[in-house]
Structure formats: C-alpha cells, structure tokens
Length: 166
Image 1 (cartoon, helix red, strand yellow):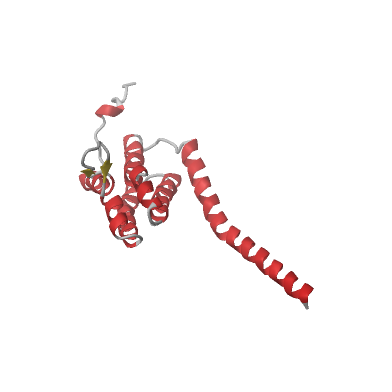
Image 2 (cartoon, rainbow, N blue to C red):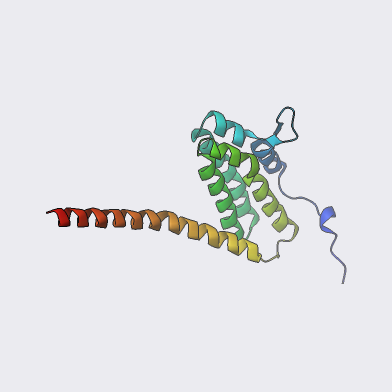
C-alpha cells in the first residue's frame, strides 16, 4: 500500500484569505524595539475597548464559517467557538484584556485547527479537543449558575435580617 506524503508536503487547502485574516488580526505588526508581534485585535481592543474586541470577534467568525464549509468535526468547531469567545470576552476587559490579547492568538489557534483537519480529514478529534470544549461548557454553566446562587444567598441573608429585625 502506498505511503501518504509527509504532512509538510501536503498541500494547504486553507484559503489564502483565511491565512491573511489570521495574520492581520493576530500578528501583522511588530512592536518597535521588540520581537513581539501584535495585530488589529490587540490594537483595536486597546484604542476602542469593547467595540474593537467585538468587531475583531465578528471577523474571527469567518474562520468558524470556513470550518463548517470544510466539514471540520463538531467538537473542533466548538473548540474554535471557545477560542473566539475567550478572546472576545477577556479581551474586552480594559487593560487586563489588552495584555491578554498580546498572548492569546485565537485566530492563529483556529487556523491551526483548520490546517490540522485539512491535512487529515479522517482524523478523529483528540482528547484535548473534548477537554477544552468541556471546560468551555463548564465555564458557561458557571457563569450562569454562580451569579444566581450568589443572588439567592444575598436575598436569603437580607430576608433573615428583615425577619429578625421586625
């Protein structure tokens, strides 16, 4: 049986626009005097807090749509959603989000996920894919449940204070 070509010689069927988009959003420019690269995601997030992060998050969704078109497994698409959501949500926090944007390259991560499954479309999702998606689902549930529990505890405390005083 013939051997498949090594991964390094496999043609990259990810469209050039997707590669360019990831580069522009994550690392198009070098910070003068350093070797650190930044993209529009970090720049717009710094100068236009929240609005810039939302705009670049919307641009990131085009890579997700490409993943759908390429037939990437659902769990990997969920992992891509997690990458975009984490980048958009944490990136929108003033100052902390700006630092986060320097290190979390969601578009590069998602581009690599697309390339990984483009090189080997039959490749099953890995344990890491499932763990990250599970962690994302857990965080979403916690983000909904914890404030409800905290609100309930505060209301219960206030009710006890009113009942004890009256």
